[in-house]
Length: 470
Length: 59
Image (cartoon, rainbow over all chains, first blue to last red):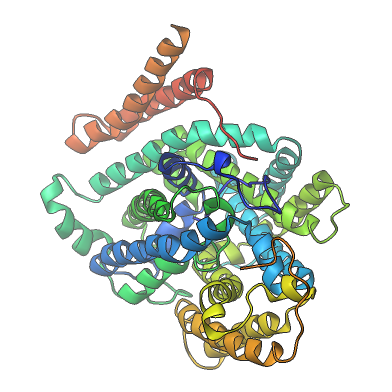
């Protein structure tokens, strides 16, 4: 997923990226292709099957949803990134002020910490195959055995220490492992399809629709997934990065804005092929034992590829938890800039380890990813409106920088109200979480325009300074 | 020369990762038989690839 695992970029933090540092299309294709085959793909793929999805809804939902995600990177994120060439944090600071950015950092840090916990859970399931302790079932919210608790805490502690000490070592390992991991996922798919009875490519649709993704009722505790669920999930699972604009920090190095299409490499390898492959592994497990509905990447991968499968699960979890912990640490460190990154990352990792013990988040990973997008997306809408629309409406962009404010209450209120409205729609309005972010974007945009009009009345601007303009 | 040999071994490792599942799909290899091949290929990949793959970081 989420994956979501772009390498932190700490150069030119408070200045536009100069021409000499720009990157070509190939860099982006490699970055996306390598970073969207994460440990969490092994959780997400099976959860679609647990949600009772049909073959048509699954395959076409993924095709369309991933296309929309690629278009979001290409048409929303990259055009602003190459025009401003600033990090998300600096761009937000100019619009919203330092205090609001601090709040954003806090929210982002919490989400990254929980996601890192889910990745630790994925890797710990590989240990369960070897040590044979009881592991959580699909409906479990609490740890099921002492062995599970110990395995997760040991895994989490190791990941945390390595992330704090040796980020670069694991980043190098991740680069080396990426091509091999992609092929192991392909192998999962080939083996899974054969085990489910596919003997020739021409029969794919027949086997897929009648044996693997048959549709029908979801498993207990899961929501029934239709085409629209799959499409919106695939589109929005990286929402914080594209429509939420977190990848401004990545695309500010791009020579051209159309390099956003490079995201297709990540989406169609990681969020199409890998999800389908992981889903077929779960189908094999259900075929062998319909009562065994546990979504545990370790056993799933082991049944297909043996020790290679376990290696892949550990590597996929480790290499993606590492930058996730690093980012969470950076987000928290920004709250207290003088604090040690080592200590903050270590502490963040230990908190993530404790959250990983509880399988609630991992078994409801689809909901968690949708929640992440819902919470962080509104500030992407604020950036979009601030950059493209406010100047056309006669309003000032980068209001905090222009006026010297530390808190742009128009942006803060638009964010808060959007999240509140979305939450209300989910909790009281019967709207499922996968669908609220789209209306949430429009609510934020309209509110930010309206509140900016109110806020900018009779407010004198600071004298013009370099970097204050849009 | 050493780099070329390492690259060749990496390529062989990738072939060794994907060919056994294809043979299993074709029905000429059992699941139990493909697993040692894939493990061997994985070990070869991690032994050979660090010798030639550069690590670019913008961090």
